Image 1 (cartoon, protein in one colour):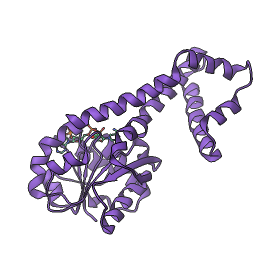
Image 2 (cartoon, protein in one colour; image 1 turned 45 degrees about the horizontal axis):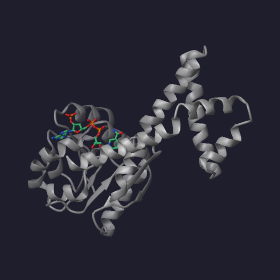
Image 3 (cartoon, helix red, strand yellow; image 1 turned 60 degrees about the horizontal axis):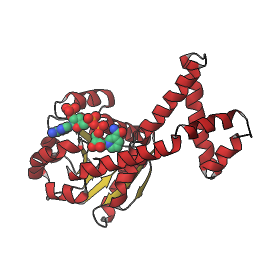
Image 4 (spheres, protein in one colour; image 1 turned 90 degrees about the horizontal axis):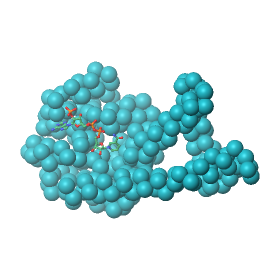
Length: 267
Ligand SMILES: NC(=O)c1ccc[n+]([C@@H]2O[C@H](COP(=O)([O-])OP(=O)(O)OC[C@H]3O[C@@H](n4cnc5c(N)ncnc54)[C@H](OP(=O)(O)O)[C@@H]3O)[C@@H](O)[C@H]2O)c1
């Protein structure tokens, strides 16, 4: 189902398009990008060889399917220009907190609408993208959605009501992990390591631990306990994390992002 219009050429659109071009077999010229001021679309076109047009209506008019990749706050204004050029094309939205019902109200002329929540590691094919279709998708649209999401990594369908929590964990989650890695790095620096060595240790620890956990199939607590000896170094660190409220704090962070996603639904 090409060409595909990309409405928005920012951080997440870039991550998705890079993921497709690296891991999929698409022709970059069949991806038509646009942005409000033109600069982000131009940068994307220069870097990845995708086609750039001046505005969203032109992109959609030229395309067989649409990916909505603007900010949630920008969709209402954009919808007015898209309505005259939509005539049944499937629309995949990546907008946080923008419900299917609202998208349908804004874009009544769209074909099947699918709401999804990708994440930045999709850029290297290591993402996860849960998605919720408005209703059962015709086989050719389902095949298109699968084809678009597979190069980004894992993907599966989920009930729409869970997409806010998905946003709280995997959509926003890479930022929490980057913050954790930065904190590990800073801990090493405070103990005398140079920044590059400390970052290398922190990064490999997080990626190695995640890979081990995934391969083992264990609950994280089992693998955690395998690192701890009574009264040892890890026990000292974990006691400090518990004292500082690490686990409830991270849970709260997930819930704050989920709440914000719900709030965006009512904007
Ligand atoms: N960032 C993430 O990790 C992430 C993860 C999951 C989902 N998301 C979702 O992805 C969406 C985009 O986020 P982002 O971080 O990529 O934002 P971003 O970097 O600010 O990109 C937004 C893009 O939309 C364009 N845009 C705005 N109004 C437009 C219009 N009228 N016509 C055409 N293009 C228009 C902007 O153009 P200008 O540059 O010219 O303003 C920009 O290219 C959001 O809805 C967010 O919820 C993001």
